[in-house]
Image 1 (tube, helix red, strand yellow):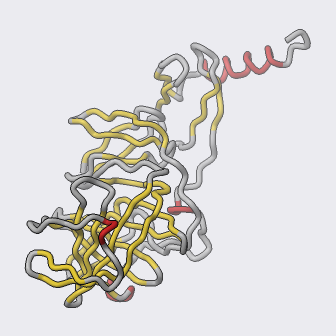
Image 2 (tube, rainbow, N blue to C red):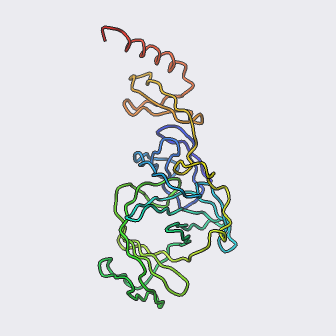
Image 3 (cartoon, rainbow, N blue to C red):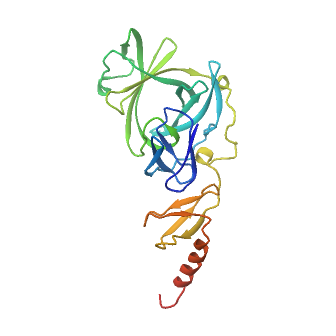
Length: 272
């Protein structure tokens, strides 16, 4: 596992999977791109919407006797509601996706297919499709909107884009064609019962916060160089970058408190 500091707020971030190239800081929600040993801030990720999922980042489980840990997720919205695609890391280094939608749990992994894939507009429900010698039947066609992302992800996630996908079934397997990229991505997996996953470290039933993000008290102060307002959301943060002047400020800087008091006093002057 590799660890680094968020270039925006200074909070610790971790990469547990070698395939993870993006991570969303859990404290300031910055989307960070990993490039060698450096992290590049690509901007703030949109907030997650409230859901009732029992799963959270750090949940553990088992699939086919292989232990895994949940390290990220993508949240999608469509006309019938919200579903999550959880990014899971197995103990042997492989990754997969755990999806929960309409009360069903699906585990899938990306695969390569040699046969050409039909256009999304050419598909219809109950339509048969043969891929690499296996016959599938189209069971569902959906257009969803990506709401947000969380944790470690193998590709960039940005809120506000539409995703066309086709679900197919055949021989106790399901296949999803994701048309968000060109060429489309293909994922193959199977449905599993919730009990079979043997999930632990789940969200507490009374915790309704999206992703069960850590509850922290924000600390506000002014940049000691340009007086721009700054805020720290975690006691783990050791430094923060000012977006106005670019300064990197250590939170143990005693001048922060003095300048904050001075700035507040100036704002209270009657002639200002």
